[in-house]
Figure 1 (tube, rainbow, N blue to C red):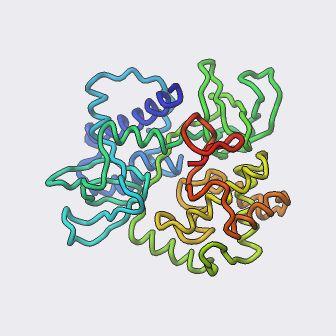
Figure 2: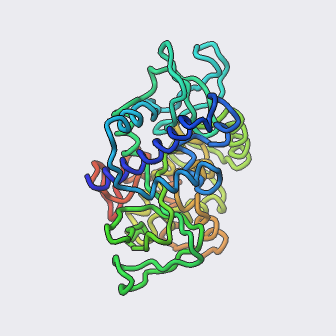
Length: 359
């Protein structure tokens, strides 16, 4: 519950800051150039520091214990929207089924409400600004509950080199070092100014003074972005044969690098499970249909987002167990069924393997 409250407060801060921007006149109309620059309201946090909005988000996301008034709570409830679909939802240029498609929202994607009328909602998610049917959206408490469930609090390192400690204190041991700009998942926040992070599968601690906290929710894609992604995937795509997935050595090593970044310190069973999640996504209509596309999908795997996967792949220093786990996953082996998500075990329902829960 404590983690849920922290995520709710951080998300609330993000939304309130965006509401304030609208109310003070910095956004004068839906679909303006400024809205396009904002890159999706809540979803803009996926790229900390990349847009002007990130500065506002960073400032508010640090305040993790907001004392909200009833009016502020109502504003939050009326601003966030989440997709309520198993695969994808079309976003259109106008509020009717015949209008042209401007983008798609996928399962667990979110955005900001711009306007509502006649059973349709104009929203912004990523670079998308368009209309979606209310039938496939969640609002209010339902939207916030889903956002808290699928969103993640992330920390971006804002000092040249940051020591990761074994405990919440400067006198504890050092687990390792993180470079400036690195992004890690936040597990909890200590009242004494220390943040517990996921450091290569272990609990590590960093001083809040040297990180920027952001709450991430995945965003949708414009039709142009989809075309670009699909073209890149077609270039990298290999033959899919139902259970097994035939691929080249480079793609196998790419999957192995992701497995090592996400579960290098876990048991072999945990490593296979991570590979299985990737392959389940490849076979699912809700995700890109190539290994490369799944691994580098926006906001999905932090090590791919922060460059760790690339660095490990290029170094060639991949554990033999991770390569073997990748080969098993490619051959159709799954010890977690057809699930498509995993995260550090936070008590949620699912298949628990080591420090991860798969769901």
